[in-house]
Image (cartoon, rainbow, N blue to C red; front, top):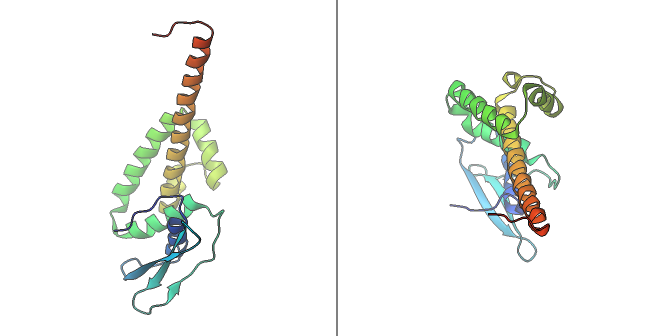
Length: 163
């Protein structure tokens, strides 16, 4: 088992290499290599040929897009219709959590993908869209919690009793 955080060089170097893998049913070798001080990089090899799967480092890559692409390849053997229906329901909930109306949701989709309906998204794009929505929801919850905290702090500083 390998555990890593999302924002680590190990995870990102793994994702970059994994994005080049077409068939995840074939065996892969995952290798960790040390970088500077507290840095660990990941290398991926084809287990049969021992060839390194290499993609150039890109610190500003579209990580959510890469995750969506890799997940799409990994989920290729799943029941797609059931998965799409579930993803659509999840995205419905996240859009509602963000407080977006239909027009706002379509505009966001158009800006991100050039499409006006989630049904026009590929499977990989739909997974990526769901990640983007959940990231936006987390930011919204964090921002609203901080806003509430500062509003309460402001009210208390003006002598208002908070119970």
